[in-house]
Image 1 (cartoon, one colour):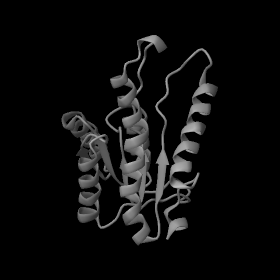
Image 2 (tube, one colour):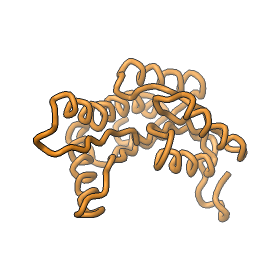
Image 3 (cartoon, one colour):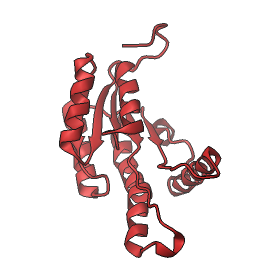
Image 4 (tube, rainbow, N blue to C red):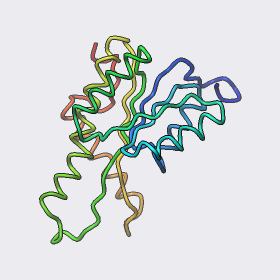
Length: 185
């Protein structure tokens, strides 16, 4: 499927969207599927994912559930390997899974800090590393990072600043700001 003008088509593409059991993850997965991609929806709760996948399939869209915790690096690696084995490719990764810890500065614990960093930074980095391998061999791929963000008195501008900082941090780690697998072949 493509849009009404046929200008945007993802027919034949395979996309993985993490954090896709609700909210923006579902919306992004739905948009990719509407554009023709086969979409693998990720989340930790398999039963919630099945409900979302069935809703998309009922509309004639190509969707599959892929339940795993992105912070479990072995599970994430196995998921990427499974996608490539079953679909022969991975074209798009949207790293949307994220954690927000709502607490005053004085109330943060080391465990909460580690949870946020492991989910929002470490898991994104290593999932992107795994996804880049098949993209390199295909000579095509897109990796998109989404920042978990909550509304504050400062509004969306503070969220955008945090997104920019996170992208810069990941960019520094990967030596790029915009990740295009073809640039690193």
